[in-house]
Length: 361
Image 1: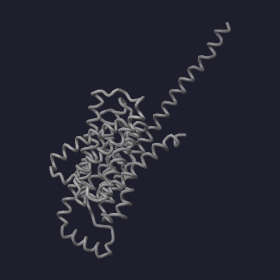
Image 2: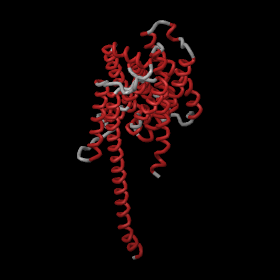
Image 3: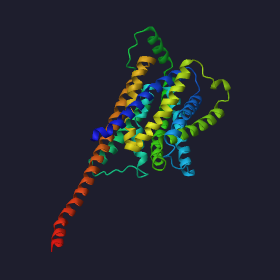
Image 4: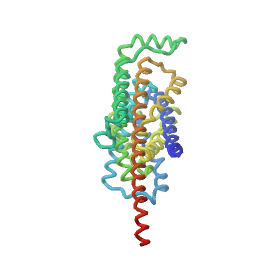
């Protein structure tokens, strides 16, 4: 019964991560072609808002609670943190690195979410128990892997058999210092984006308590994000030609990422956060890297580095130690609740004979 209850959430999370893996590879492709970062974010969020608005209106018009200034403020903050700034930093980091490497930093999101949730009381650590120690150890290992990703690139692992591969390898060697600086800069940007994405999970948990309408909240969030990113775009890039999408790939990528990644994925994430909590939902982000790596190697033919593999393995190991601690903690809570219920039932049963005797006399 427990597995059946988890199955819908797991299917939604895996589907979301599959879509995000495809989107990351497509975005890397058009970024290399010179498309502006904030223009991409603006179009993605605008399409998301337009796509979700009618769905939200018709599906949640009867159950939708009243929008207050408090909820709108939270949605504006969620848009700024989880949509505008997160996507901007991630796209900048993606341009400096690769699709698979950038997704490796998303694996730190559960550990970041766990650490950020502690001061707000959304997560608790009992160091006397195995679950608490596992969660803390997993978070530390995860962050260690993230640091190693940023600081250690390592040797390339992919064979350079073709002329193009040899040529690119020679060029990369000649520009190694510049590439290393770009790699570190990309890592810092990706780490910042991951921290903001983790913060969004906590904000979303608060929004779900007051405004549990995923379609409506995501549509409003996307609208706010589109306005924010458009404002930043006009400040950073005043050239009108930057807003013109050139070629079918750019148009398809922006529409697909807007409807699927920025629209349905936010709805799905919000639904999963409501059902299973922020840390559980964030714990399946390694699937994004797996899917992105498959498409990255087959489509973009990007190079694989030893540091990326080692760092990713360390991050994923830490992630699943954290997840094991969460699962063990959840089992302990269920056992305690069942013991309390059994204790209450036994008290009632012990009082039952006394009640019968008194009524018969």
